[in-house]
Image 1 (cartoon, rainbow, N blue to C red):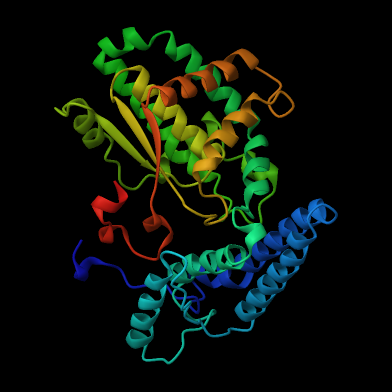
Image 2 (cartoon, rainbow, N blue to C red):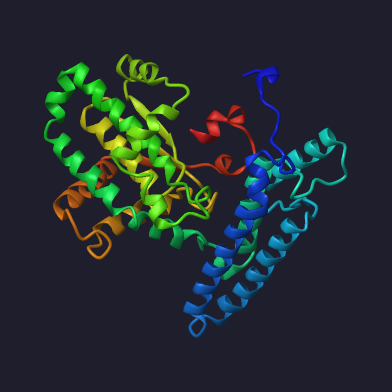
Length: 355
């Protein structure tokens, strides 16, 4: 992509943009939920860990201050923090944006949406990272898990489909026409799993979330596909001469979307289309629902919990066992990089660092 073809940035003061509503409604809602979940954790440790409780009070005050700065159109400040990886990139970009817009300070309600969308999660992360008792706390963990558990009907549909296909995997691998058809099906399943994005569904009910899952919803969504390179992807995989054919997933949302990525993963490995799958996870809580490495096993253990998923236990167990088998064999791996939580576009990827 050349500089001439890169579209202009979308700014939050454009009342026809996604950013306009985001900074005035979505972000405040996300911050209120972060405060609530921090308070829940504080209440759980009030008697057993008073230090964590006191530190939590400070975190909540800082989140409230951030919310105030957003709704009152406060200035965007530099992090000036060398201790947490990646923050210098935000400071560098902020300087460039100020220069391009000929302003001394960008503000929350007038600045560029995507840069500030990334900035806000890094700001929240600093509040936890500078407090010893909260270093590993995922403020979005409850939301991620509860939303996945609410996706039971979609999960059941796909684990049943997977177990049925597994018994046919060997025969399927010999029939290229049928194999490509199922490949396209699992790609679509993985694609539309993205409908369950908690950062975009900040104001949605669980019933509304459920409505975007399942085969009927996927079929209805086909008309929304603008560009389809499935044929190129199929050719790349099937014509590869690599000693180890590997597919990399840059993971987005945890929960149901990641579950659909795992469905695609198992299909690719079972049929021998690829030899290895690598999941690229976030190093910190990000965009409300993005997948961290720890979320992988959390999801699998939640699936094994009969209180969360009481039906179709044979199929659920079969699915989880298949994932664990491939993990143990090194065919499913997870990798982390700080790149995924900085403000840079994909064309800035440092291959040696990320891969």
